[in-house]
Image (cartoon, rainbow, N blue to C red):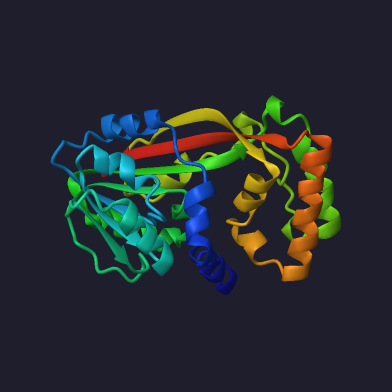
Length: 265
């Protein structure tokens, strides 16, 4: 793992409470699909990699599953423990997944929500496979930013601000992708040789933000957190002005939640 990648994946811990408040959750249908596709039984045990504040953990905990959550960030882990306090069958372990001592053949399902890409895949997939029972499954899911007609051109406009005020955050694919252009991770999972057929599901939805809530959301992204204070203040103030003057104080962001489920070979 590069030093930059290692650093960026720790930045979320600095804004744990904000992360809990503003990061989008996941469609309820996804959790039903994970249970169905993984074939986990009601008494099954789940390992979650990178639970954050527990946004994806709580829906499984409510279903009664025993869960071990691995979370690198100390502050994130503390928020997760608070959110999961009503579920004594859930344990949150504050440690990097790479450093976690494997419980071999101990889990019926391994899940990771918008976190698995921070890990070195050559380590993560192998370690996941070792933790699973012979009938176990992996379920990886992400929230991806996609084009929405309801955004009314906001993201094209804000891209101009990125280019002029925060060019270090500009990427070739920065504009919202069309749903069909979102990269598919099926091949990556299959190429490990550890898992069988990958089942893919997707869930399309929109979220609405005012200028304050949108800036709070931006302030949970690793790249934006890494901006120097002066640049961030000027950049964020300009985005807020754009939303409040050109978009009547409210913008819509499109999301595509992608799910990949595969059983151990």
